[in-house]
Amino acid sequence: MNYRILKDRIFFWSICILSSMTAIPLVVIIWEVVKKGYRQINLSFFSETAPSTLDAMLAKSTGELIPGGIANGIAGTMLMVAIAAFIAIPVGIMGGIYLAEKPKATFSHIARFLTDLLQGTPSIVIGIIAYAWVVKPLGSYSALAGSVALAIMMLPLIIRSTEETLKMLPSSLKEAGLALGASYTSVVLKVLVPSAFGGLFTGILLAISRVMGETAPLMLTALGSTVINWDVIHPTSAVPLLIWEFYNDPNLIDMIWSSSLFLLMLILVLNIIAKNIARKWRIG
Image (cartoon, rainbow, N blue to C red):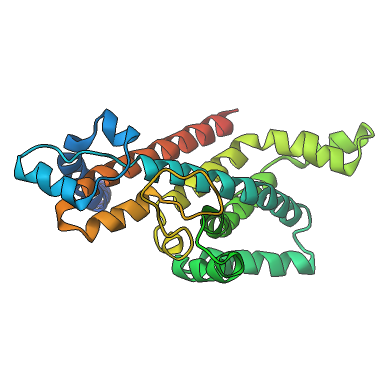
């Protein structure tokens, strides 16, 4: 008995130590970003566009904070993510419904395989595809091209989360709806989808947080802009693009940490909301 208790305690503490070791890199990263990025966070950081190299040099020579902010990146990110969500959410939900309702159909096996393949495709490859599909025909980089690339990346996550969520619903829901005389389409859209809303919304938020920090596909599609742009057919900036631009300018190093902190906090909030919704949905 003492041997079993000792073995249990050794196993328990080993799990605790290994779990703590996996959390250490995350804690260190967050601490480093917060420590170096909080100084630039102020009102102008959210309301002004990115500063120039000259502005940054003058500010650093006098020991002041770098003027300007990332308003053009925030506006571009919100614009492209909104358009991408508008494209990907309906297609993803309908695709997930089909896979859940027709799991053994030949087309379902093909679609499921392609979805898994797309989910593992490198983002730079998706950027090249969006460049060929949108940038080349339009003749210019644009927010629309960036949105198409992000929408392609969102699709697999929404499709699979929708499929798995609908599979978790009891079959009695559909049987009751059909027994009351409702059509199959009405049962799916008015009974199953609302019942699975928590899981669907969670999958959508996770997909949005997944693409919000992507840089590579936007470099080939949106390109970037020094001003706030709401025109979808013109080049547009984004927070990840600004981080890359700041990285290439030694005078704007401080802006890298502040922009990274903002992006990290935004994605963290989206993930916390998704987790809370998922937990409440399970409880309900």
